[in-house]
Image (cartoon, rainbow over all chains, first blue to last red; front, side, top):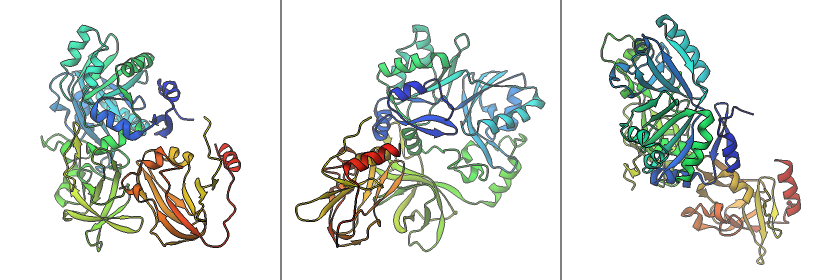
Length: 367
Length: 129
């Protein structure tokens, strides 16, 4: 028996297939995972992501603390509500976790971290926050709903009061609005490659809000669809595509590391500068040119199969492209054509630049 | 949840079903329980016609979005036909596992092995819940 979110009973009564995820009993799907996937690409899907961990950081030196502990630079967050995606690194450059940081006020930032890494993240953050006098508070009183898809925002704002509706529709991409009185927090972020909202709200209000969103036509979607959607969107999954043994530069996350300004001494910086100078493996997108399904840990080799290049870190069947796709960590200077070993036989694959799909549209040409 | 188990088939503990055809061949597929556990199927690999299969040999692969799973030959024999439609429409295994989602037909070699009756398979499902 794992941990349960405030919506667990709703998932069970909707006949969801429940699986363990990071110690939580979560819905894998409510029937057809592929139909849930398409609902998000074409209309609106609704996810319970309350297993993720919300951490509020408060104190006058919060920004200074985050500039030390995150590889991306929260100095980039100048407008209240703006969000930043970042890795949190070990001194070795290995990734402790990836997270989103929201700037709310000069003395209040909110982090959302992964469920499976909650304990070590909190320990690390508390340890490093103490010298800055930053208060660290886990918000286990909150639930998180993600409403994603081209009609997700319309379906969500239909539930709000006129004043809230105006505020919600004003939220820019990758930004949030917070109502301190009600503890509601609405962010225009997600993990699907579609527009939509992630809503944090008191766990006690989660069930009613879930039902209201379903009544608006948002289709409940599980972790299965969440994984195919994020992979089509070219987004990494912690534990698959990067972990404490891999640094961001070999995980397709160089864009999230702020080396400028040079004087900012974030944890992991020295290791990343050495890695940057020496080159090394890179994370690429793969499309399988034949029938079959890509999976993590399949071995990738040169097109003729002669020399191994690396392995897949994530793989799946893309419902939008109707083709297998994946992410693979490969040696530098591999050609565009490679092969993948699937159950002992060689299959042709092509290296591409993710994302594979964005806003409902394929970005990769399928031959 | 009660599952309708066809009464005219035989079964294995690895969730294959076997149908005796008038020709003397047997038709093989995976059960409702198996397709439901796998979820949406997106790829099916069935053996070449004329391939010899031993009882219990891994002879086909069914892949859903989340996992790949082997199918084991419930009999010894030679592949007489395979369901070519599955390469384009693997979802037939989900929508009609006992009909249009059949995997292959096998010409038996020797005597048919002992398989589970519908009642025994039902009991097995109940015990493994």
